[in-house]
Length: 117
Image (cartoon, rainbow, N blue to C red):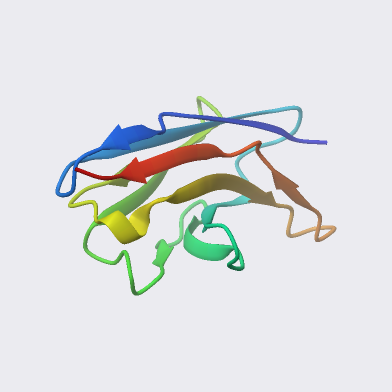
């Protein structure tokens, strides 16, 4: 069982930056694939970025060059640094942990990011 708690969302002006954090507890963190997804009302949840220990990260085309995902296995935490934010980045951002052994997915409660002037 994995528990995920996100933090760091908020209101930011276009062009600004935010860093999201996701603290994990309850299981062995390092071998989980960690990621961030986002969702806006009326739309499907969208993959933003994923990272595996020792493997290059993957990003959605819409955030490449602006967002950076990273993980600190010693702190059981994954981060999403978001720069050059645009209004279309406005969404609820969810942290996700995927267990490659049994295929289980775990989700955080979500954190709101609003990009507006």
